[in-house]
Length: 284
Image 1 (cartoon, helix red, strand yellow):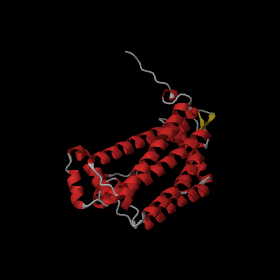
Image 2 (cartoon, helix red, strand yellow):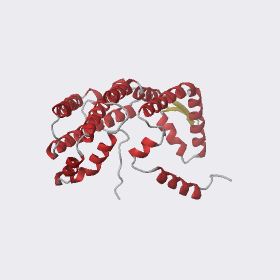
Image 3 (cartoon, one colour):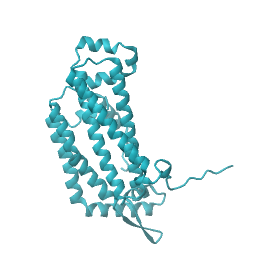
Image 4 (cartoon, one colour):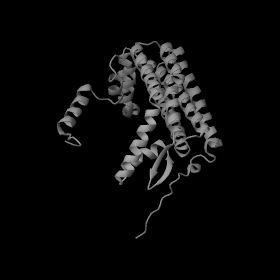
């Protein structure tokens, strides 16, 4: 029987030769920036000229948005892989910052498009959705039209998205940067070795109880030493989100996650009720 063997190191050059200095990667980012600019110009032109939206225009915009989102996700995943390979890779960290900026710009343009959908006359809207070429997009278009009803103005939404780059996302980036640079000393079989947070966390599932205990103690000591600064970062991340939600009229912290996942509060409560009825304690 043939035994399959797999390399423990990713071959990231098969995605972008040259890693974070890849010309192919630079070209992709440049293309994303160009597509974002063209998409912004298209939505702005529609808003200024008050041109009627039709199925052709909508399909073209949807195709562009989809392509941009896929490209940004591709770059984001590559940056994550680079940092997993080398947590101290500053170029990869900068690449993650660039991704955050691209995502923010994309979100801002999408909000503008959603506002365009929201001002379409209901009768015209109903006729549009009857078009066969939009049959697969009815759900998302209807959801976007409803989502446009925000308590914030277009200018406020754009400002909030822009501030999140150096606010909400930057605090998250700082948290990840600290975590990526942590090295956890753990002794296994009498030999001490340094592990990343991810590797140390995986050791908590080791088959040897002594290794699990060593990993647990080492992680606890590491997080305890950093508890003040990590609490500071997490509080600012949460604080930014709470204040942004308040400005948008969202007073319940679960409201947005429930909406994003398209479930009702009653559904979530029912799920937890079933879990609570059936879960058993780890120990008596």
